[in-house]
Image 1 (cartoon, rainbow, N blue to C red):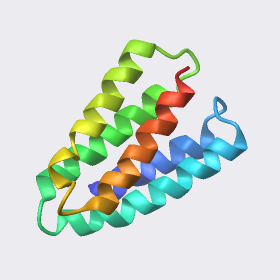
Image 2 (image 1 turned 120 degrees about the vertical axis):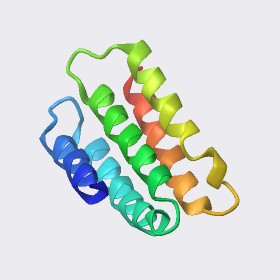
Image 3 (image 1 turned 180 degrees about the vertical axis):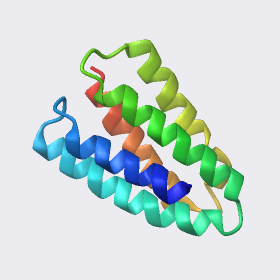
Image 4 (image 1 turned 60 degrees about the horizontal axis):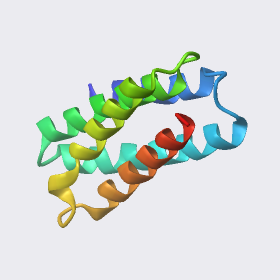
Length: 110
């Protein structure tokens, strides 16, 4: 399930025309890192890993839409950020990559 969702995120990023190649490449690298972090987290916190992955998928959808809805993008990014808050001390790598993704998506919404 988790792998499938992350694969869908990667596919959406590859196919989107609303991102330039530099942003696309950076986001794909971040999602690749997220994939590793989520795999580790799912071993001990599967429900939280699923939640983070779903928020990442939703945020990707909102950030890559042709006609962006700034409010929905903001809400999806906030949800993604909130989904990792409890892991700041136990999994800082996950928190860092999610924060980087959120920052990139926020900048795309401007």
